[in-house]
Length: 169
Image 1 (cartoon, rainbow, N blue to C red):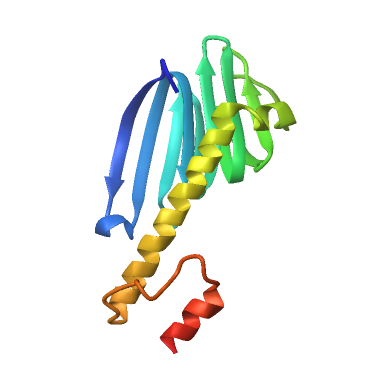
Image 2 (image 1 turned 180 degrees about the vertical axis):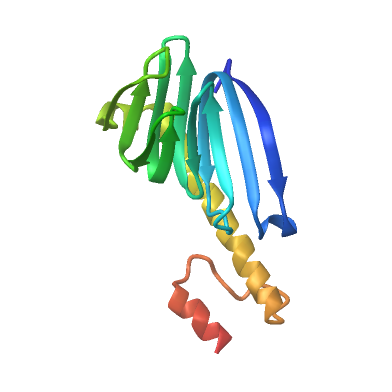
């Protein structure tokens, strides 16, 4: 989002993205949308943090909004572990957790329909769909290559899985 100050605190990975990876982002001010596709290793993590509050996941989509008035973390898919240093809480899709300026939990609540309908959220969810489609295409191409198929031209990503599997048989 505009006027967001974000730092990469930690970034590590192994084996071209197939092994353990750790990402930690620190938000000094502003709003960050995160879409974590599926970290492959149980010890992998993706963390967004502001002061002592962190949101951690291996798979999910969440919004992290930090300002002088407090912090709002809304989860839009899967589960995110939210911690304020003292407590860890699992926040599931459709829930949000609000913190005051001192990072004490104010409340955990459902994300309202108005919040789900905000342009920022809708644009990010749509962008996530496009990104996931691109990732799926790359995975299929890699799998085709691994079984000796040079081109995916005969495959349509609009076809069903059953139709594409039939081409392999």
